[in-house]
Length: 298
Length: 254
Image (tube, rainbow over all chains, first blue to last red; front, top):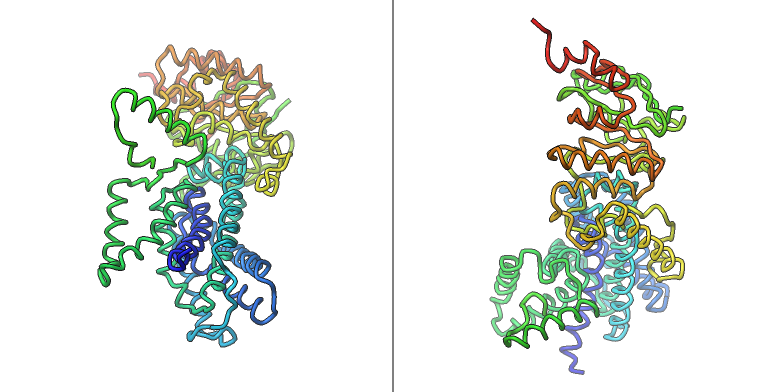
């Protein structure tokens, strides 16, 4: 495979890993976070430390990165999950920036100059494997009673408590799984770039993840997948317009938000059964008059 | 035998006493009415029982266990659920999903069971779906199973909220103005429904309502509140002839 395209796919897969985690928290539980780059950083630096300094194999190192990120999220959650609405969002923003600034000053990890020489173990196949497992786990979770409880909290917090849902506990579960996903994404990134620098995990990264989740559609796993693929590849296609590419990127996002405020998928999922339904509708329609598919269901 | 016991409960918001020293017992398997003019503190009492507000003074016993100032979900776990004056459904979910979500406590598979789709998850998930279908059938909502809750007609939204409350198998059901905005015909139907579910689910019902036909028609016992204090207590006929109650609702003669 063309290494350039492979590179883009690996980056999209890494982004997808973090986006899936954020999708659980934002799309399904209704909590906005602007600190997920912080969890990525924790995962990335932990896994890099394990493989560089302790010769730990790739997969355990990445998983450990996810675990440590999840542990940090538990501490943050204990302190902030009782905050209502926007306050939680601000607290995560502060957390993400704090992590970055701390890493800037820890010389053990190379400080602000960065940390080169991490083994290059991430490739398209292990990223794909991580992505598939991550999507399956997330889909199973969402369709279980625990997932339904999370959606209930997003929809109506007080009513969920009245039917016996421990809102704090479930928000915590959501945050911890979400952070684990982001941590694993960080680990994959460290072993793909072979270089880590705190600047890679700035607020811009957190915002990018949130944009992808909203762009794909809140509460849709397939939306997150499409969003991660499209929005990671888009800046590359726009290289022909050189310095204007981020402008076009912004315009594309604005255009989607205006034409489909609920995101690309808008809460719907692409599953075998929903595809079948779509196909039947398409057949019925083409029997009468030949017409294209509706834009939103591609 | 009393299922719920309110001992001297008081709630103050700053200088305002919303509920003051209310003492009351709800008898097991009864339908008890809670009435009073607007602002009398009826909904506040519901919020105190379900732990939405914290008590300033007093204690609440449920089945002789102290549930004072417990978290809302813990009160629900002990067997009390409620509906809301302004309906609070999971609006964007279907009727079926609303019920299915509320059944969650009837099984106990863990997150790991769910992530790996272990046999326990499959078995118990099937059980939940059966329970939800059964409840929809009892409440006459089967035909609208796939409809988004927000698109239901108003009367059926109320019905769905009661169904959702029943899904967690409560012993005590608190209904906050279930007939608000209903016409006399719908109110009549609601009355029958409440009586029916009480028998079927072996429930105790505490109900806030302004429709006196409904209250006088189905309640075994009535508590009247005025300005946060207990005004009277008794059977429907006692309440109807109580001069203090008549004065609170209609004012003094002459």
